[in-house]
Image 1 (cartoon, rainbow, N blue to C red):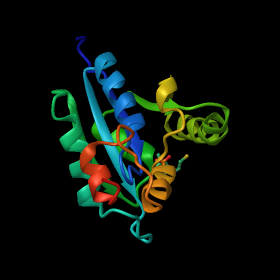
Image 2 (cartoon, protein in one colour):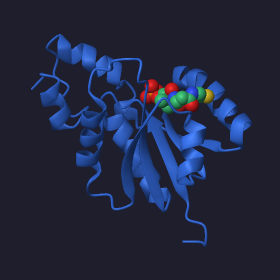
Image 3 (cartoon, rainbow, N blue to C red):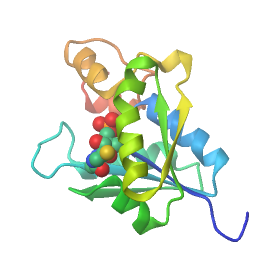
Image 4 (tube, rainbow, N blue to C red):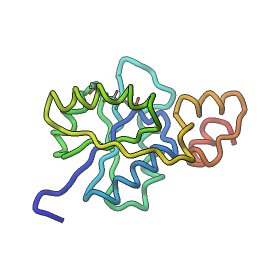
Length: 160
Ligand code: PNS
């Protein structure tokens, strides 16, 4: 470790966390000194899961990673949160071109606002089709999402 700890922020709605998110958090934790999984939520919108539950799902799934912690921020700019926690970099997963099209403007805007860079990790090929919204749709219609989200999340979605 150098004098300045390398701290990454892995932001998301995490509504709920998926194995795809967890793969990125785990890989970020192997690269950095500290990782903050930041649940950024909009206080004007009701998500599927209350923010406390989103946090608990991530904490329970990352308990084996000593350098990962979970925080939640309501109605805040990601770059403001990143500066507050001293993050040197934003780390996100990319599942392909569609993700890149969505992520690139945000990465450039975040760099414009504060100079913070975003590093993209390629999504694990076995998880490219996994998104929180697709998981919720499949589970709500009775599909089995085992292995794509933690078992606790699957059970909360009623897809057990
Ligand atoms: O899981 P998601 O929905 O892909 O996460 C998107 C998120 C929360 C990372 C993004 O919407 C975000 O950074 N929101 C915080 C508000 C903000 O900083 N907006 C400007 C982004 S350039």
